[in-house]
Length: 41
Length: 576
Image (cartoon, each protein chain N blue to C red):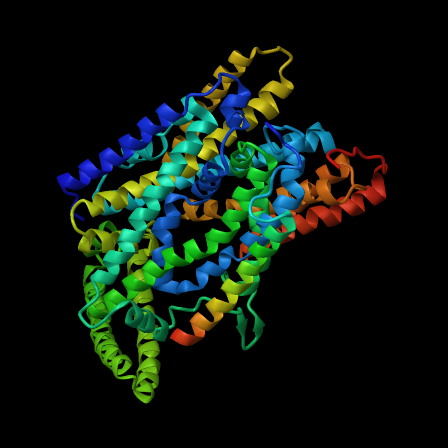
């Protein structure tokens, strides 16, 4: 049971890239939802 | 609503599968580490599904399609703060919780502040979670009681009691593994429900046309700003700002300080796996919620071509038909159906215009459809007023019944049973996690901390099982009490979380980020903040999502002022 910050980070080298992915994906979703709303209205 | 033998077989088989799987997978070591933390050996994908299963209650699946049907897709904005909260929880909360090897989030508060603050926060959590779990039992039970005529007490016992078979014996491990299976069944069934709704659309109307019809009727309002002619509407529940800001504080409180969630990600094998499961939840939650809401839009489009029920709660409709208001109700129904017929013709014309890509006609018909939709809504409000007049204690809000009524009226045998099964599974997922977390707080924060008698690991394990059982009985009793008290209590208690979440979050924010504020200042600041939040709630001047922001901000501000005015600057430094 290792419980340190040195845990292997999946996919990326640093956690900060994961944080950027999550926040970037949210931004992308909001933009897509905006165009979705516009398109179907 | 007809519930066939095949439906019973599917329902019983699915529930039995979960119970047996929970008992089989729930074998764990007989100590607190095994019972509450699965010995910290859960892989990230189980933790992820456990986090999602804890968050989604039965009402999520009952209400969301109905919410989209009546109010459109804008409800999805409620979840916009969640991904941001996941990042903050991963940066600030998870490392400290993991490093301190705690069982409950509130243990940390004693190390950072004092015992009083730990006990107050744990108590506030248990109070709100215990009562809200009771409500999460009665809410789906009431729907099944109304639609299928099932006995309410028996339904409550099945909804909140049967899961105790695996939750009390297997603890966090059984909760995690069953939530994994429950999640797969629930989303598979919802996918089938969506597919069936598309299949039910009339010939020549496909998925795209159904979306256009919903959109032209104003239902695909995924992004709204909350702005009116008089500025920003603070009482507007769902818009992009309340979703991002209010939703962020709500999700931060829920995932960072609510033991029912903290207890899930503390079971992960490593700190990295705790983080990974939370971040993946941040990635998938919004699209999944969007997909569930979309089912409501498909149902809406379907009902534009077929006769939609005037009121979706069957039992309530029967009661008003047999009351003194029967004549008035019948007259209002005739008016509503005339509006429906006119709307149907508009939608048929709109579908043809969409096929021919006739933009001028589409624009005309959209305006016409929106005014007819507004008239229909007004007519339905009139019908609801008649229902309330016929029976003042009745629930005139039928949003929770829309999806199930559609399922009961149009789904084939067997699939109806599966949809009812997912209501139970979704309820069990969130209730099981709640009971496990309530038992952990009772055992770790109160019993073990305050008892002078030293207990062996086996005794602690046995006490924890008893506490799980007792909380199960408590929550079922709350459900029974809420039913006897009527609908108004249920509605009041539904916002109970917002009364406490902001304050609890404020305490943790001070603990993590403002080292200068000590235990006594934060304790009194929390009491003051709580009084203010409840006061603002009763003044009814702002939507409930903002209460989380106010509660958290009040603790931080009062904590700072009280520390500066009255208390010493000497404070503990833990976890940094």
